[in-house]
Length: 221
Image (cartoon, rainbow, N blue to C red; front, side, top):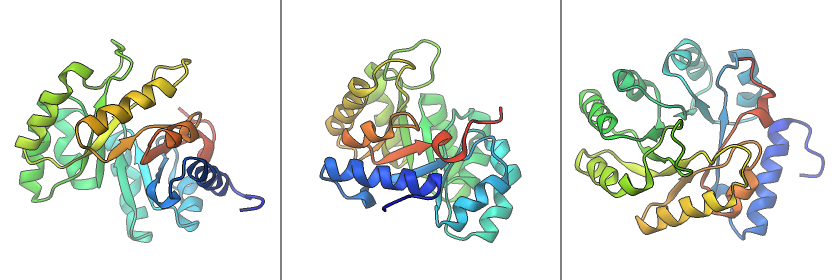
């Protein structure tokens, strides 16, 4: 694309460029437009440009704004990219197509029960605390094999691994580590990379990049 006119076109062009350098196909990377805190009127321009994968952080916020959008724009794939409380598992399974934040045994149990009740299986990424940060969600690296085993036993489809590298630190080693962990466990999906580093993540194997600010501007809250 010669001169991208919209933020979405620019991000798509950047993804294509990074894929070309990495000798990957752009179709192998899913752009998840993170629309958290943004109202429906900010989301619709992207929907009109045929963006169909969107990410939300909170179940309640998504419940408030997405049903009408889903009715108006068929084919949207809704991703939950924020931490999920176990008591919201039923609501999350009902609304979302993909969950990126499976990170603990109690949530495995809650999601398995919710999926059984709903009669549907929702693909989940297991979130890894890739920087071993105390304040951040995610499964500790050492506990990952056991959590993956629990998810398998609960018949939860694991799409891959997800991470959020520590802020203000070069993300490359963390993306490389997540890629290695995914390979070691035979998983195809790698949900990694946000507005500031999605091109780097693509170079290191990202299959899903979660981009908000580069598409919508600074969040309102």
